[in-house]
Length: 332
Image (cartoon, rainbow, N blue to C red):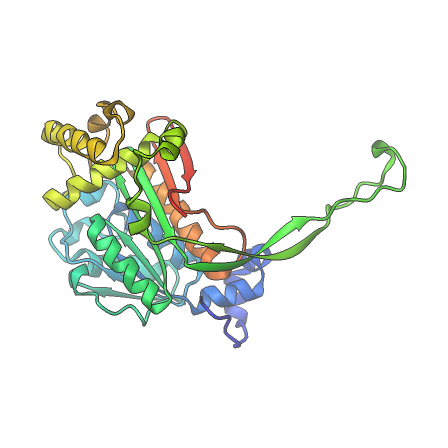
């Protein structure tokens, strides 16, 4: 949990964050100002998340990425200039990221994510472009240190976000019922609806629990039809990343279908739940999908840090083919 700092907001900060302070309050903005964030990988999705959090006014943002800037980045990664082709992607992104908000400290790390063994210096860890095993490891580090953990990725037209906020407390404004004095509704004076702030809590599960669901049980089979097929498509694509250490290419259709069959058998899910068409729409990072998933992911960070409003629990899944976004609570 990010504590609310006691220091006053400066006049410059009040002017810059005026709309946000009006929206979620001064204490929430102070918590954002204190938040130290680690962002793993700065691809198209990472660039969207970085932009949103820097504009929101976090304390610091560390960009970790060992990869070089490639020609593919030009289509979706707007923080790395094209003239920095071949340079480290995190370092190439710092200048433009910093220009978004000089009040946020933006730094770069060029090491591989596997070198991250201590996250105590961060309040939030956001992992993008990682295989499931790495997400499980980072999630465990965050649980041990008390840091908030969020993850996400985009594969072509498909994207996902996962969050584990531990035992998360938040404040939510709920409407106060209007007590009438017996007058008909059309004769009552029109007033602004009243609300009161209520404190609530939610218990999140780590990502290994969410991934280790046995879908062959009777209870899960009943809920299978209601579960988005995008969850299982993402599982296939994540397994491909783990096996190949890269995103799928147009020539990987057969390999993806083989992984689909293996995963479906292992989970107890019919292969037709996943289908065949996904292999045509999972290539690269589609910029609009990055914008949608990145917007949701960064908004969940802001909500979690500021402790305002109910967070999504625990998957957000997006299908860019039909612009369908859905929240799935996979495991408790």
